[in-house]
Length: 329
Image (cartoon, rainbow, N blue to C red; front, top):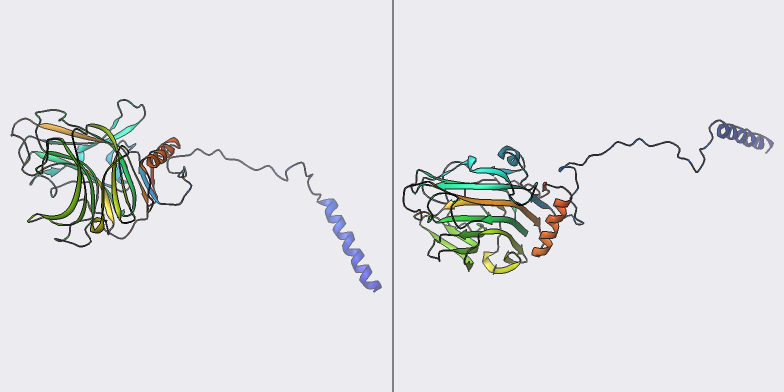
């Protein structure tokens, strides 16, 4: 017992000596001063200002060149092919980036397509984002026009925002497509100025045989508009500036992942008289998608405003799948 007390006493003396030689700092002062490094946020480093974890795509198109855009998953189409005028050419130089004339600091993507009324001198434009989109809410702010920028009017031009799967065989049961299409000079047997929203079950291109359903709105749609499509719970709903203009369901609901596209093209057989060159424009301010979530148009506008307010110019958290991302339809 005596030996045990001696050992205990010795340990206490050692501990006391340690505390005296290494005193704890006063409670009122930090043990050390942390080193701070100033942080300057960038578009890539700013977190998405939303409270949920749903994947989104947002692009403000604040680019200077097409190369900057393609580094974010976009394809600018080149070559020939469907849709449009046979032998017409899709040209990458038809895509440019311009300043918004009325909003300082706001950049726009501009598509310019042209024709002189002949097939060989008809040039179309298309951009596509990766094939990884299915259910959820899609939106874009787009400027359509009724007349060409230059030259005589009358060509049946199609100004669009749409989602689509590749066309790999006639009547593919997994074909999916959702369209906003404005025809300022008519086409497809419709009136002179008509806007179509169309959802597709399947299609055969040659000879033409389509299983789809459309809703239309007549009259001019020139100017800026916000287009929203909800693809949730087995129904597809199309909105223009907050107004519901079409709802499609049943077999027309998409069942395969789609790419996201904008296209400015001419209808086969719808070119005006051969002669002067005429140019048509379509401007895109931004595009947005939230996967798996139904958003009302006003909720979309609020989310876009929040992203822009946080200086986010591009955000893509939608997982990339294994499907080929083509830009040929």
